[in-house]
Image (cartoon, rainbow, N blue to C red):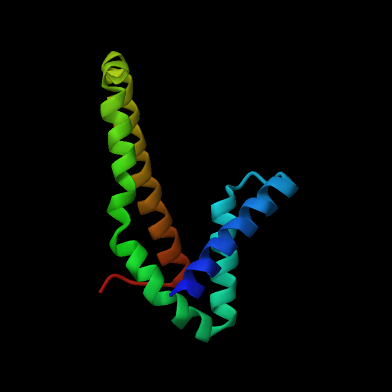
Length: 117
């Protein structure tokens, strides 16, 4: 488990380093995740080693939202002044995310020749 976690963190570090060194407009963790995906595609054994650790992390992913919740409660007075703007942004971004997801799904289905059955 420790080796798998070390590899995950090393890929994130490599992604951060690459993002900062090259000035790419992508976050380091995204580049690191892409690197990790490439490594797992190239080595099925590596994917099997990482799978249990990744599943354990994903099973406890909700714990990562606790600091965000504490931040919201800590700044509730500031948020109160911006309630209308926040609700508008949440509503519009939710509608856009659903629309983009549906359009992407339709495009992929059309490209792959999928049919409604």
